[in-house]
Every structure is written in structure tokens, then in C-alpha cells.
Image 1 (spheres, rainbow, N blue to C red):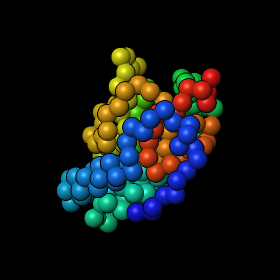
Image 2: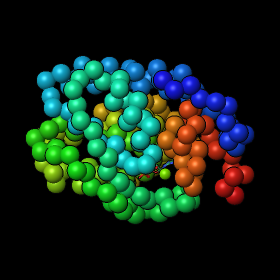
Image 3: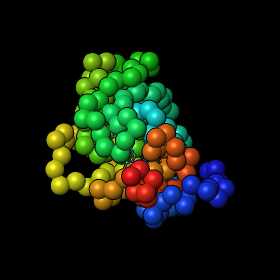
Image 4: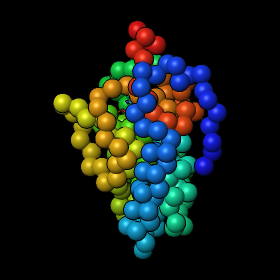
Length: 187
Ligand code: IMP
Ligand code: MG
């Protein structure tokens, strides 16, 4: 595990929601669970760019099974903290997933639109199974697109968070922890 230096961006957060240690411990647990569940399967991990990059990288190394990975791209947020409501596929996968067992790896499950669009995209490639693993699961009063999530790292309130891959305007991804962004930054 990489040890992080003190980061001046820490001052942009109102509080830390999940520390580096908590995240690493939970990722190890998810990796162990997936290792147990995918013993006799042909696992392919598919991360969603760009937010899931950090999570996928740690999670993959916590899985003690041969597996491959790829990334696909989806964009919905633009530069604001509110989803535009439309999901654009920006990159398809390149690894062959036909008859394989895919786990889609996402940083955060918010409205569910991104995961819905990505699962639709992946089904076209005819994998034998598709499951979803999200690090964060936002609790919302209403959600338009429910997608079954088999693995979830942490449940969290409906707040805008950054760090460990999650961004605001493409920054904060390199923080080792996850925290609530101070509304002063985006208002
Ligand atoms: P959904 O399609 O509404 O579920 O949104 C999922 C995508 O929006 C994620 O892949 C994130 O990139 C982004 N997102 C949602 N909530 C947050 C947040 O709290 N912080 C940073 N990005 C977020
Ligand atoms: Mg984003």
C-alpha cells in the first residue's frame, strides 16, 4: 500500500468519511469475498473510468485468483456536482468477456444511471454473468434506476464526496481517504 503525504487539499473537506485504513481494510474484505465466490469462474473485472481506477487497482490485488481487467468509460456529471441525467459511453471494453464472469467495478452508486448504462453495454458482449461491486453506496430517498449490487464497500449519506478516485472537476482523486467536499468550493 502506498503511504500518502499530507495533502493541502485536506483543507477543502468539511470532514473525512472513510479513512485510508478503513478503506484498505474494507477492500481486503471485498477481495477475500470475491476470491471465495469466483473459485471456479473465469473472472474479468471491468472498472468504470475514471473514478473506479484507484479502487480497481487495490481490489484486483486483494483477489487471490487469476483474472483479467479492463476499463470502460461513462460520463454523466460534466463539471458540476449534479448529474446531467444523461450517460454517455466514452469507451467500450477491449478484453473479450464472452462466456466469462464479469464484475463491474464502480466508485460510487448514486442515481444508478451509470451502472445501468454500463451493464446494458456489457450485455452486448455476452458474458455469462455480470455482477456489480461499488465502493460507496449513496442512500437516497428516491432512485430512478435500480441495479442489483452484489458487493458494496460502504453505505453513506447523500452528500458530495471526493478522494480515492472520486473527483470534483477532476481534482482530489489522489487523496488516500474519502471526505465531504466543503460546499464553499462549488458554490
Ligand atoms: P450515477 O450515474 O448517478 O449513479 O452517478 C455515478 C457517477 O457520478 C459516479 O461514477 C461518479 O463519477 C459520479 N458521482 C456521483 N456521486 C458523486 C460524489 O459524491 N462525488 C464524486 N463523484 C460522484
Ligand atoms: Mg466524476
